[in-house]
Amino acid sequence: MNLLSRRSRLAITAVTDIALYARPQAVSAKALAARHDLPPRHLEPVLQALVRAAILKGVRGPRGGYELARERRRITAGEIVRIAMAAPDEEAPSAVPVSKLAERVIDPLVAQGIESFLAYLDAVTVEELCARAQAAGAIDIRMPIDFTI
Image (cartoon, rainbow, N blue to C red):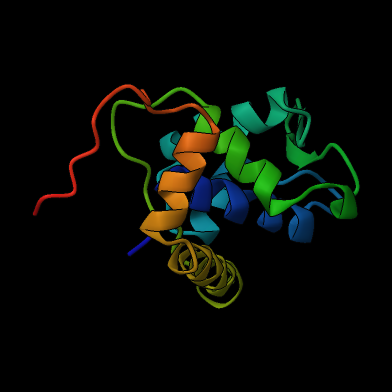
């Protein structure tokens, strides 16, 4: 089970790849796609969304491509995922990155995050959800509650 979209995984992988390879020159979308066995058309909408959000900076010209717009320590995986989730949907689903970086770094990170997310949900009971719903005014108190099974 994967709770993150393909686009989110692609975005995290792309930003990490760019952080690793953007020195001394920008990383081209073509090079990025080749390293992760992806068609470049899947990358461009994600990369453009990351540029608009000031995570990446687009560099024009024959040696153009992408580089980080901020320091590595000032960009979080959560921020990248939020940007990827907010980007408009493409017609075709995004391809999944296939590379050592994706397999050895990004995928274990995502798996650990999913485990933490599921562990959090495992600690929340239906009783607690009901209490939260009442406290938030998410239910109509006037409705009779039926406990019949």
